[in-house]
Image (cartoon, rainbow, N blue to C red; front, side, top):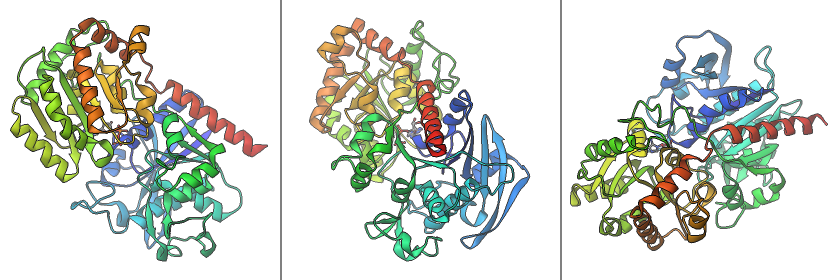
Length: 482
Ligand code: ADP
């Protein structure tokens, strides 16, 4: 089976969040099921460098006022199709925002171009290549199912995956015809979305199947509280909505072979963790004390991630004898507040502002617990890395966090199955209680070691998720053939 994935980022080449990890990992995981994935991505400079100088396989004479070419190349284990359209993508830095943090003013056309070409490849633009399914990721690829729908005729099956419903891709209705969408598409059951053209909405409207990245989030997005405006559509299409948990790249995130951390370790050789804790404390300017409970955070700093709640709860964390090592970037006010906290609590709070893949690994390897107080979380990856590294996740009971962490309540402790700490509802008071509970568990080494061991024994690989995607793809192909 041939699947064409369409996505705006891909690990390890260009990444702003979990989307890239999944787009990067799924092809290899699906190969084991006889499914070949080619991934269409924009030709950002990072991508152009990574693929070297392959031959163009297709000229694109015109796409929304620009021209370009399609390149085919292989990076690592991934087959890429690259839309080399310099007018849209020859810009360094963040794929979505200008250096000042504002969205690129032509984002509507940049990602419409990606989707337009994705749809064209789906309909046989490339000689000898006919995908069975086009798999569109997030709003940047949301127009693919719409373009295929309005093109009419024979088309591949379409799957739309929601990695985060908060990013919806809304653009002015005046762009409709310039985007190559017919006038009749601007309706309730077309691309219209609260008075604008909705890219994610379009994908959710027209895709044959909708997936999101955890069963919990699949339920939340159909609720009034979590639907962010899409709940009506998602409820109407409930029969085709599925939640499939993300896996993680267990080679990239393997404490036994991780070259980025101070000392390798494994569930059977946990002694190596101590050196990583010492290394982490040194790097974050924390007092060198191996008895102290070190909380780690690796996160975008945004309202979604609930780190303002952590600022509120910081006195409790410190009163419980804890230290904090935080790596993150994003919201300027949160960045400033955490930097202030580090100055105010030297040796107890260490903060690195920025995006640093190696440092993310070091936090997972050296912290005792990982805090993820998200207000909503489609799947969440950092708690999965934490499980694998014996870092006890302390998480809000939402979305994928609720699905992947077993709370250390008395019953789960008695049954010997706890893997972390959950709290709900998501507010500063409950976070304080969770931090206190974590400190109590940490003070009881046999219990703590058991929780760590349980987490490290969890299967967080792509094996199970890949099986589910493969089954979904096969089911869709069979249903369309029937
Ligand atoms: P989201 O996609 O909403 O940001 P996820 O938990 O799904 O959240 O994925 C976040 C990914 O980005 C993880 O791989 C995490 O390690 C990484 N990450 C987030 N912030 C940073 C940072 N400042 N430095 C390095 N990696 C980060």
